[in-house]
Length: 209
Image 1 (cartoon, rainbow, N blue to C red):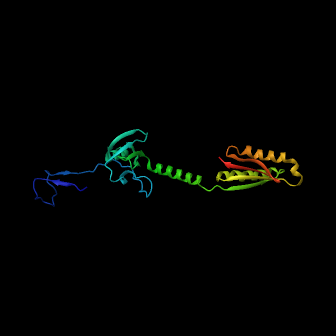
Image 2: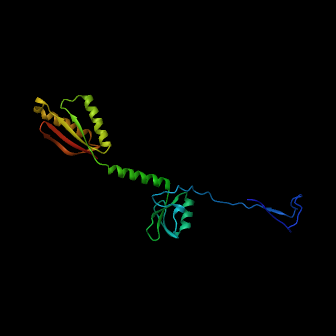
Image 3: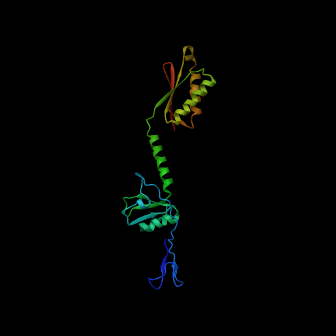
């Protein structure tokens, strides 16, 4: 800020500079470092100076403690001193309820919750895996990897074991194979339909946990 000159009168020799009796007073603006304001959000709760038209708030601190009712600017100062944001969490309350939060982290967690909710609302599909009683080790492992992927995507799995010719005389082998599938997926899936014989097929349905 420009210096201001103080002296005894308005007349002086500009070429010679200020006489000794003049005093230079430098005015400096001292400001406390401010927390960076989060970018305005089109959705989600209002924060900091985006909270308008509010004279008082009920303040909840970052530990969950109720700090009581105080003026909006006083609450904003508390947030700035704590290095946090003042976030309006209950705008319809009288007075509105605000909480001290890291707004960036709060938004991230909210978006994560919304993504998980959308994932749960996803239309569940039933994928089918076909096995044979005499399936070899490699094919079995490939099928099981596919089963695991289906569960991770939130889909159900219909395990179909088909008997051919004289294999119908060895249904116990098929049942043991389905029990093995059930056992190896029990941590990520639950049985929705136990193995049942339908014609020349034995069918079991599993759903993700």
